[in-house]
Image (cartoon, rainbow, N blue to C red):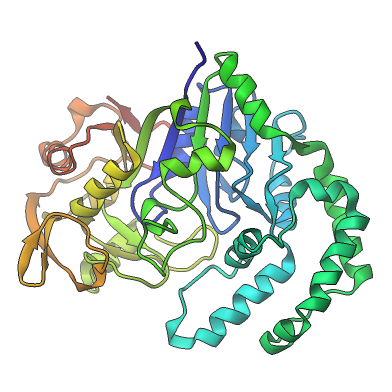
Length: 418
């Protein structure tokens, strides 16, 4: 009987701390696979005081024995990936593979992204400007280009130049300058030179690994509430960030999914625009942002901060089929005399315990939990202060999901596994 692939998924609006958990768990896996998104996502990993910022490379790269897969559901910016690979002192050949069916996110996609955001003015979504939306739009419009096409860069260049000519009025209206044929061909040749050894049929690689009973870990980017279908539309990303998206993003069936671990921050953050019921605009939000160092790995933008929203987390847990949570950044709540949890919403004059489609029209209903002094660096559950234990228990009760992992600092070693 074939093995099953375990899955890590963000439960809130991204930035939950997936990178640390994937890195920690990846030490026990043979293969780590990234299923969707692009270099708009950022995973920060700290190991022995060294910081690694990953955007496209799977978080298992720090396990020397693991194979790392960038799946077909990813939109890949070659220049970003190449730069990211340079932070590792050794060659990643034989350890990193890119799906030949992943779609290319080229520099002109970013220019289009930025130009369209500017045109929207105060109606802007708040994208990272990394070209993710335009690259996915080209994919859905069936005019995109796959990574495998880099292997014949001349043919690929000719095809893109035809599209530039066909869409000249659009680019001119947006004020986007497209490269000349010589400039584009030079770019593509540079990409091919570096990336050709990594391009592969990754779906077959994953199937073979499953059939050989290899241990496989799947990771996505962003979070559940940024999902194109189930997120706070239109303030979402352009791909499927939920657990089901891992199947289409890697070419596996739902039956291939094993344990699902939802990554949950001990409070709530969000980058960009869109509804955020528990956002705090005062001292609490400022403290969470400062202590939690809430700055985007990719954009450098400050994150909006607020209390834990159990309604959203319960919703996301059901949507993803979570078996357990990894509760991140519990230490950021150190020192609060009282900690609030959103247990329900007031919506159209009534109390509700579900997430409506118009989330901007709800008001949070809070419950108070007594705070604690410090949990930072604790790696045994019994040593946690009683307030922290009560907080964890209440989260489990409100979300119908057990907390199986607790992070008490950014370092890999400061983690409690229950």
